[in-house]
Image (tube, rainbow, N blue to C red; front, top):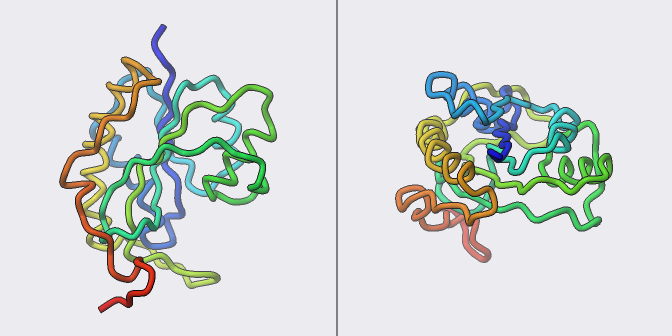
Length: 188
């Protein structure tokens, strides 16, 4: 039986680089993934994603931004840890950890394996910032690389959904940590 896979774009299109996930999903319209893969832009609809995570998928790949201390536009592939009960579920947000906690709270079945294809953001408004549509240049440049990465990752997961995720490749993982993200340093 072919594994069922979900590719989920996550993010708010009105908050600068937070729109990365939806933009990657839009790019996949031009380069579709295999028919066995459900590709969907969830935007900020965490409840919808939580319910879909309970729909019998073997693996879910969330496409989102994440601050990891790299240069803006750097892609990372992260294996999400299963919820441990310390994160409070939230039905009205799209924080991936809270969505996973909500899905765990709502369902009796175990969650699928969850991978996050993350892009280091350059611009993310904080708090109640004004709307700021449009990706920064380095994150915009990462959209095509993310689509390429998904076209490499998904066939590997379709052949064996439990296998270790293949590396994204040297250009995507090799950027040194951004100085502002390192403890005890300041941005130049």
